[in-house]
Structure formats: C-alpha cells, structure tokens
Length: 255
Image (cartoon, rainbow, N blue to C red; front, side, top):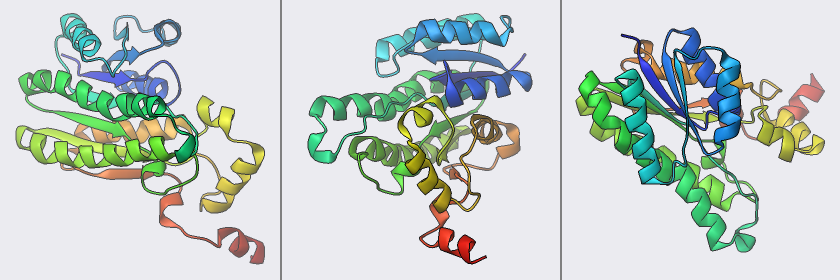
C-alpha cells in the first residue's frame, strides 16, 4: 500500500511544490486549502487523479479538519505524514495590529497545526508511526518590523514542534519543522519591493532567494524514512540567513 501525506495550504507555493514532490516519490497526497477552487485547479494540473485528493478546508476550524481527515482515510485508507504548511501573514506594526488580525494569524498559523495534528495522529498510530513537518519561518527566530503577529505565531509553532516531538516520539511519530528564509513565493513577489529584495540578498550568504522546490526537498526528507532518527528539530532552509550577522555586503565589495 502506498504511503499517504496530508499537505495543508496545498493550492499554491510551497504546499503545491511539496505535493508534487510526494507524488514523484510514489506517495498519495491529500491536499487541504481554504481556497478550494484554486486548489482544485492545481490538483487537476498535477494530472494524477488516482493519487491526489483535493478537499477545501479551513485548518483553524476543528470540524472542517475532522471531516477532511475522515474523507482522506475513506479514500486512501491511512495517513503517514502531515505537512502543516497553511499560513497567513498580516504585515502591520505592533501598535496598528488589531486584535482581530492577531487572532486570525494565530488561528491559522498556530492553532491550525495543532488541530491538524490532533486529527491525523490517531491514523498514524494505526499505521505504526508517522511524521509531522511544521512550516515555521525565519521570522520566528529573527525579529523584524511589521511582523508582531506573524513572527510570534511562527516562534510559538517552533516550540509546539518540540512539545509534540517529546510526546509523540514515544509512539514512533516524529515531529520536526522546516524554517524557510526568503523564498520566491507568490506572497514574497507581492510584498517584497526591489529594495527589500536587494537587502535580503545582501544578508544571505548564498546571495539569493530560495525556491519552492528547494523547500519541498527538505520537507520530503524529514517526512521520509531517511530521516528516521530526526525528531524535534527545526531545519533552517534559508541560504545561511539565520546564521549570519552584519557585514556580508562589505566583505563582498572588498573582495
């Protein structure tokens, strides 16, 4: 029987690239996204109807998640991996962030992974184990402007990753996180001006943005048996951004 992955936020970007990676490796994939129409189109574009299932789902709603997982198991019979990728960002200063904004970000970025984990773990237990990969962010480690809600949600998700790893590891369920740096997603292209992009390039040792496919490779690795002894880890996929301080541009210019 083929292994089955549940990928949230699968309509586009990192989630869609990750779905494609699982499919190429012979897995079946359940795609969950609040934007059901876009996800259905993306799923059709994968041209693999026997191994894909697109379900519209708001991951912040326990009832919707429970129904989606029930449908997934009815279709494919098991769940071996969960990728908690669905996330939103509201870019406002801390003093201009409304409580409604804060609550919306926390509901999707932090409660969503918790809800999806609770829904999927019983099926992983039946399968004898599994893997959960939470998609965090460099913003959960390095503070910046306009990210009070987003950065805090991702920092909390990193700690939730470790809490879950400590508890679920006893049952053969590994929980890790992938922390992207700047990635050429649709969101980045929308909000990152040329000046912002230049600043990021100056601060990243690899001197470029990452790609969605590069993130998918890391996510699949942590989901696979090749990462069988990796648990409670946060893997930075960021070109070295988190590891560096100031001065990269000056060093390049001097060279």
